[in-house]
Picture 1 (cartoon, one colour):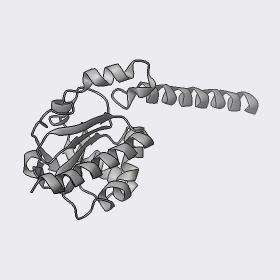
Picture 2 (picture 1 turned 180 degrees about the vertical axis):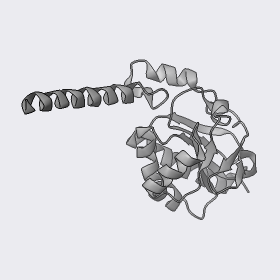
Picture 3 (picture 1 turned 135 degrees about the horizontal axis):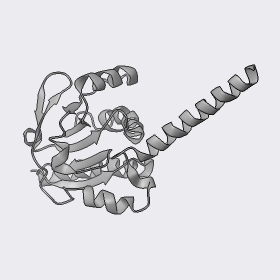
Length: 196
């Protein structure tokens, strides 16, 4: 009798694990690169490309303030759209403090992570659990995100001092993030010579 019960519990547990795994693979908009044709889908879902002027928006910040993108003109901005439920977003955010914020501290650089489609409460719980203290924007109705893309996160838009997009990326891969860091460095160096 105990064996039948434990076999049934094991079967239920395995079914639950399989369902969670399938759900994670099928989550809409979270780094769909693993799917065939995802690069084409991501490209089609990208509304703002390198060379375009970055659409202006204002977001409420987690700390209660507001940030308007056009107010950051003259700085290099890395606009990042993410969500708490997105595993690649969490991988990327884990690198932010050291690789972005600390590395470019004291320079004309702003990292602007914007939570896509989530409430302040969801972001608060995530920040507390992860121990993040850096500023975060809130976009619960996706008003900012929908100006840049129609699907897929994480997304990064590197915006130059002139307000034009230098680079747009989708998803998270360590090597691509390293290249993004180099692009930030290059944009900052270029601004030092051409801004004067």
